[in-house]
Length: 81
Image 1 (cartoon, rainbow, N blue to C red):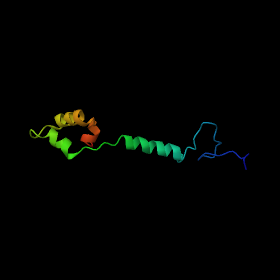
Image 2: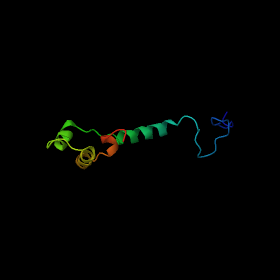
Image 3: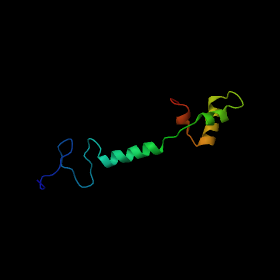
């Protein structure tokens, strides 16, 4: 069986360095999961209290302050924008 070439999802022979073209290999999936975990940031209630201690703020100002305090990006602060 070692002489039988592996085929991709379309039935073509997989060449050296090529992927399957269908489901990712486990190593690639694990690497993507590690990247997702590194990008996760927890914003605590104390972070928000420090920003809003002087009262309400416009969204853009609050986002800039939160980014300065926690290194969060705007996508974490205002989902959907």
